[in-house]
Each structure stands twice: as structure tokens, then as C-alpha cells.
Amino acid sequence: MDITRRGLISLLGGAAAASAQAAKPKVACVLNVWFPNSHADVFIPRLLDGYRLNGSWHAPKLQTVKFYVDQFPVNDMAREQAAEYGIKICKSPAEAIEGVDGVAVIGEHGVYPRTPLGNFQYPRKRYYDELTAAMARNNRIIPYMSDKYFAYSWADARAMYDGVKQREIPFMCGSTLPLTWRKPPLEFAAGTEFDELLALSFSDLEEHAYHAIELLQSVAEKRKGGETGIARIRYIEGDEVWRVSPAMRDAALTKRINAPPPDKGEKPEAFLIEYNDGLKASILNLNSKTRDYLFAARRKGQPAPEATCFYIGLYTHSHWGFMVQAFENLVLTKKNPNPIERTLMANGILLAGLESRKKGGAWVDTPHLRLQYS
Image (tube, rainbow, N blue to C red; front, side, top):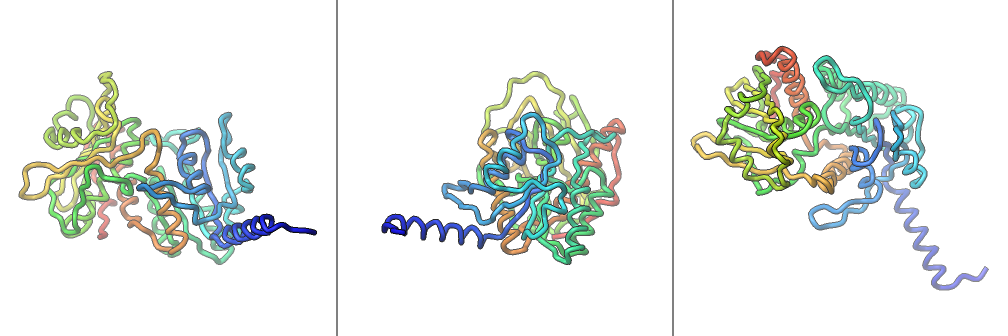
């Protein structure tokens, strides 16, 4: 068979590309559902095709070879995308991780009931149980990413955390918000002394206030003495919310980037947080005021608050490049980029806040959140 020089170059190039792809660690994705603009939709395409971040192109470092998908709605994208990329859709999470080097769990969205507290019963703990049982059977621990918080109940969240530590699983979890840009730049050195912290969120309290909780905790954990835990939490709503730290709130609102929505008089909600060492913090969920996640801090001895926007690409979802990058690094280095105690703490804050809401705004004591880490 005659091969032209151009044909030979093409063959060699194709072989080199195939070899490079084969050399990449293989990973699986376990997801609730994949539809347009879902968490799966803003994460998996970047994992498959690469992403732009801070003006640079980042080619994929991993090869995605298997999916487990829990639900297939009418606007499902998982089956078509799996066919396009030659990815196997498995019948269980356990099957999905056979022979792979890492797993990303996107346990968000889908049709699931809410608990009596109002949070969705996403099956993250079920996935965790099946995945860790498969690791034990295979006698092989692999890096594991879990998008957002651990679980919809404290008992499950704590069991997942304890199991990860016991099994020494390279484990990454949490929100995209602590990873994203701060506009304007605002960083705090370890050992900073704070009087008060505040974060602003919007939309559904359970779904989106969580992001504000975790971004706030990513700053709180840097304070002098490290994290000492939380004493109690309270939910409030309506006019009482506007009386919470107005100077801090207004400083945060000056950092909005996305245009705020029309003010339709939607009910404001908030969680008030008292830490064991006396630090006070609040999460204000203000649907009528912002479409950004905003933050303000008041350092000891400095009466004027400092503020920033933890910026997300509200419609481009560009900040998800940080999450894909963190997962790639987790698989490649087997080192977690963030303390998983942060997510455990934020998970507990959310659940205690929802409990307070169910109790009509009573303070909820949180001895289980006396967590210490630095």
C-alpha cells in the first residue's frame, strides 16, 4: 500500500494523539441528572473538552470513560453526550468505578423529595455507600470528588466525613464559590482577627444560601486561633433581616457586578451564626437586591468593613473551570486542595439554619459543630 508523506504524518499524528489519550488517568462521573445548565452540564463538558480560565486554554488532563446517571428526564443530555464521546453508561455507581483512577459525583438537581426541613434528598450518601463498598471489594482507594455538601442529614454527613478520614480517601468536596475570583481582590492572611463576617446570596434558601455559607466559612477558618466551631444558629425573615449589620450589608452591595433584579418585594431571609470564640456572622438571602454572591468583613480595630464579590459567570458558568481544575489536580496528585472540614461545617450550618426556620426562628444550639481545624 502506497502511503504519501502527508498520509504518513496524519497516521503518526493520530497514533500520537491516541497514545496521549490512553496515558491520561481514566475517571467516571456519577450524577443525578444532566440537563441544560445543570451542575452536570457546566462541569462535564469542561472535563471532556477542556476550558478557558484566566485567559488561558486548559486541555483535558483526564479521560472520562464511564457514567452512572440516576434520572433521565425529557431534556436529558447524558445519553446523547455519552454516545458522542464513546462513554459507557453503567447500571450502578459501583460498576462505573471499576478500573478507573478517580470519580466525580455530581449529586445535584433532579426530581427528589424534600425533607421536613426543606432540603432536597439528593442521594449523595447512597452514592458514597456504593462507591466505598466497591473500593473495599476491589481493595483499591481512588480519588473522589463530591460536588457541594456531604448529605441532607447531619448523621449522614458526619458518617461520610468519618469514613473518608478512616479510609484515607483523597477526597474533595464543596461549593465552587471559595474557588472563584474575588472582585475586587480581597484576601486575608491566616491569623487575621475579625469582629464580624457577612455574606449575601439569592434564590432558593437551601440551594443557594449554601454557597454563601461555604464562601463565608472559607474566610472564617483563617481567623486567629483557627476554627473553633459554632455555638448556635438562628433563622430570621422579613423586616428583621434589614436590621442585621446594615453597614456591612451596604458595603457588600456596592460590589455587585451582575445587574440586580427588579425589586418585587420578595421576603428577605437570613441565618445568624455565633461561633464559639465570639465571632459573629450572618448569611443574608436577598432575592430583591442581588444576583451576585457578596461578602463583607470587619477586622478588629478597623470600623470600616471591607467587601468583595465572589464572582461567578452567572450565564457563562466560567467559574466552573476552577472546579474541573481542582478535580484534575485531585486525581493527579491524590491531595485535596481544600480542608473537607470546611464543607462539613458549612453542611451543619445549613441544616441548623433550616431547623431554626422549622422552629419559627428559635436559636438552635450546635454542640455537634464544635469542630476544630486550621
